[in-house]
Amino acid sequence: MSLIVFPAIDLKNGQVVRLAEGDMDRATVYGDDPAAQAMLFAEAGAQHLHVVDLDGAFAGESVNGEAVRGIVARFPGHVQLGGGIRNRASVERWFDLGVSRVVIGTAALDDPDFVRGAARDFPGGVVVAVDARDGMVATKGWADVSTTSVVDLARRFEDAGVAALLFTDVGRDGLLKGANIEATVDLARSVDIPVIASGGVAGIADIHVLALHARDGVEGVITGRALYDGRLDLAAALSVAQAAE
Image 1 (cartoon, rainbow, N blue to C red):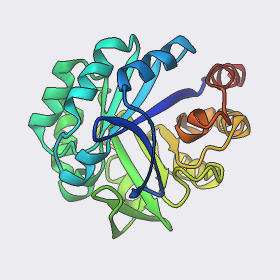
Image 2 (cartoon, helix red, strand yellow):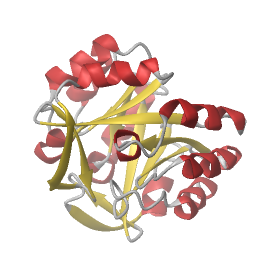
Image 3 (tube, rainbow, N blue to C red):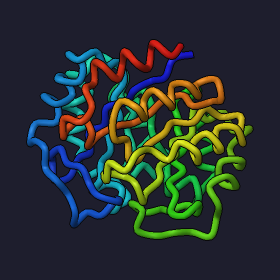
Image 4 (cartoon, helix red, strand yellow):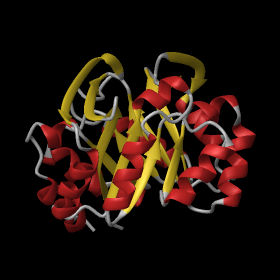
């Protein structure tokens, strides 16, 4: 059981950016050609890619569709996409385009029946985003914090057939503080759904430790700023993730 490393491409106004703690006003731009960035990750050995339409997450519908289409057309591996996917039409549109998985966050809390239906009809294709601030679920681009705990939300989907849970510690995202490994592993051990870690990956040590917990149910890890800032080499991360198998 090796760890999947998902390099991240976050889209804002058609550009590749990274946010600090999910704050749209604290965006660092890393490029204006998302498809070219996807190809660089592929050349480093990535077989999976995590893409987020940040504008879509706030708008509740796709905003950076053209950029996503460009990425899917050029990236030879699996594309996992999140951001503003809140209805059946959106899910079907992205699968028709060639996206491998859709990530649903806000709608998982607001409309769980929609998520269950999508997971049933697209086996292995739906990931539920469990975004946390201080252990509570954050929604609508992390702008709102609910009164539902992360574990409670996750357990609602244990029998739904979702492919994975994407757990993000919002307070660490984009800050290079290190992944919240303890909370990630605790969640993975609490449910029967694979968990993908996200938020705060600072370097190769985070990849190594998470890979050691693959047997606890940690399926993968998403990393963005550490790659763009040169603190983490993608080829090395992929190697470490495989070596822990």
